Every structure is written in structure tokens, then in C-alpha cells.
Length: 322
Image 1 (cartoon, rainbow, N blue to C red):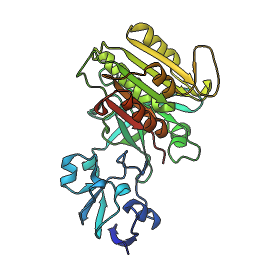
Image 2 (cartoon, helix red, strand yellow):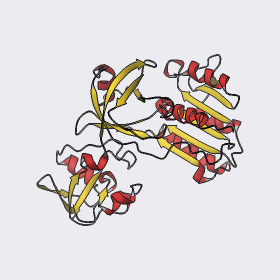
Image 3 (cartoon, one colour):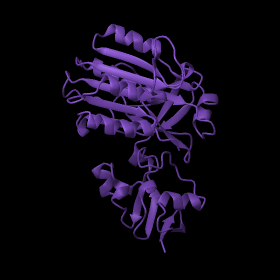
Image 4 (tube, rainbow, N blue to C red):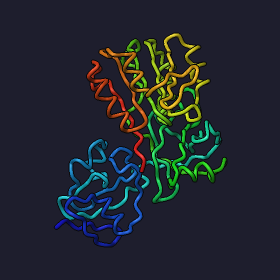
């Protein structure tokens, strides 16, 4: 049976188990989206008529919920709905200039951006990066607001991707791009500066961890900090020298790069999460940050909880590809 979605002056049918986003895409509408998992918020819409489902408003600010904003990727409608894209005023879009592009390895490009006007964020949060109205992807912030006057992204090239190849090959220094406000709750808070911290990342999941670790140190964290970063091979890992220098400069920082498919001097052999959990079997009283491959993130969250960490002390940012 399904329901009717009125969008952009037209009526579209939506199947019984179909989300609003999938229905609009099936009918050929160009709607911005990225993860399709309710994480990135890049598809945010407003219901002008019809109540959004509770699931489609999970994680939104109360002010947005009260104005019927919702995530169409998570909304299987229960009534006919009239919907519209969130306006720029609601999302607080910001223009930013590209000030630097530097390859960090063969697959990851460091992009530094200078926002026009004030831009508030915490290291480790993410922004939605707009190529145009329909192509948008989420990238975590590796920069630290107290240390740098720019935003830093680590963009991994995804074969066949709509945005990352364009960023690698065509985006140029001096170009202007549009960003959303900073989103996400994976960042450091100085509620217990002596608490042990565990960081586990894979691939470009290092980006937010690189920011959070430096932010914690900048805020005076004195408890032990353990960072495990893993990739398959030596050519895929990055910032090794920088992180070794950071660990050498701070007695409480311990950094371990990990390679799962090859052995090399100075690198642990195996998956980063498995190595970390083997070395730290008792995590009671610890705080953990997990970023990167969604399978790694979900599996590690459960194991870290079973190892004694409180659920409220486990922060995660799964890199879900479109």
C-alpha cells in the first residue's frame, strides 16, 4: 500500500518498507545524501505536513525535532508527507577556501580549508562537504581549534566515488567550497584529566583521532594515551613520523602502527583492534575512541564494553561509505 510523498511540487509513491530517501531517489529526484545510515545528517529534511517517525529524528537537536526536521534515510513513513530540503539557514552552511592540498600517501589527501567567518567545532567532529546540491560527503576534522586557524580533512580516494576523486584530482588551492556546521559527539572533554584513553583507528579513521589526541594534550590531559592505527600494508599507513615524534615529546602518549597483511620493522603485525584489546584486557575506568571501518567499530565497541569500559565512555565514528 505505502504512502505518498509530496516533494518539489510532485507526488511520489513510497513502498511499505521503503524510506523517504529511497523513494525520492527511485523516482529520479536529486537529493543530497551520503551514509544512508542516519549518521552524517547530510540528507536532513523538514516535514511540512505529516509527522516524521521517531527513528528518523534520533540524534537530532531538540530545536530541529520541534520544527519537524528528520532524516529521510531513516524514515519509513506512517502517513502521507510533504517534505522539503533543509534550508541553508537551518544547517548553518559556511563557505571555506582551500589553502593547501598535500598527499599523505598514495590514497589519502590532506586538505586544509579556511572558513569565511567564525566556525566553531571540536577536534574529532565531522563536516558535510558539498560539491553541489546533490553530491555531499562527510569528513572528520583532524585539526585542533586551539592550535590551528584552518580545518584539516584527510580524504581517502574511493574508486568510483562521486566526491573523493574530484577532491584529489580537480579541487585546487584557492577554490571555494561549502561546508555544514560541525556535527558528531566523538571528541574530547576534560572531565577526568587522569583517565586512561584508548584510541583505535583504521585507514583515514586516523583523522579524528589525530585531532582528539592533540586536543586532549592541549587541554592538559595527564592520563595515559594509547593510540593504535591499522592498515593493510605499509604504503597505506600515514603520519607515522609525526605520531612517533608526538609520543617522544609526551611521556603519557603511546603510539603503535599496525599492519594486517605484511610484516615490517617498527610495526605490529595484525589488526589494530585485536592488538589493542590483547594488550589492554582490563578497560574498567577507561575512555575509548573508535574510528574507521564500521565492522571494526561495532565489534570493538562490544569487546571494549565487555572488558569493563562504561558505555558512556565509548565514542565511535564509523566511516560508512555511500
